[in-house]
Length: 259
Image 1 (cartoon, helix red, strand yellow):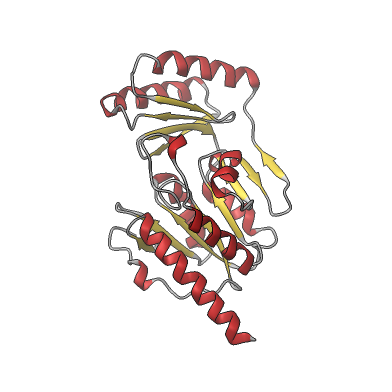
Image 2 (cartoon, rainbow, N blue to C red; image 1 turned 120 degrees about the horizontal axis):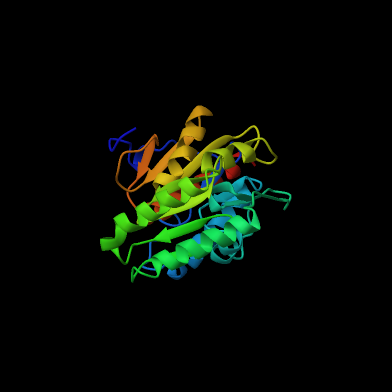
């Protein structure tokens, strides 16, 4: 679906007893910041996520390009099922960690090549995630093509890797790892299985998640502008917060009606 995707007012009413929720973080639950380490989820939103997780019996997961350790810090005190680094690492609802790792010599060679190259371009930032690397250029847009060319060179050198473009960033990650695969893995497991998936994200990295959810007859929600496979749309992060607040009220009202 393109920019004509529906605004949040048209989103269907949801019940926590029926749905499984998947949230991206940067640009969805947290406003984009100049530096990745400056990103935060407001305290009241973290509390609402914790309430929603409880109301849907734990069928809520964070699905992000960030490592799981960062997701835990951002969402604290909530410790939810999570897919980090686009699914290269995934913690299921039982706390078991599923991880795809690079060979140590490959990771070392990659990091050295990337560090040496990006050191030439002031304002760019290399984020090493162990099994993936994020090349940020938000503060150095004049070097966008340099960074993209570097990433292309790396994946040609290491065919087991692939590129994941994002907003002012390109990530180098293992082949076969994406948010759609992560969502599908969660949906095969309790407490997600048998529910209708709801995926909320804002970036190119979320498109495969939208496609996976659409194939399961779920609800895909794009945050912000731009063409998307998502079937619904929220205008910005603040709209996500407003929708989350209304969602909690609706679920609580539904629960009262069942008593």
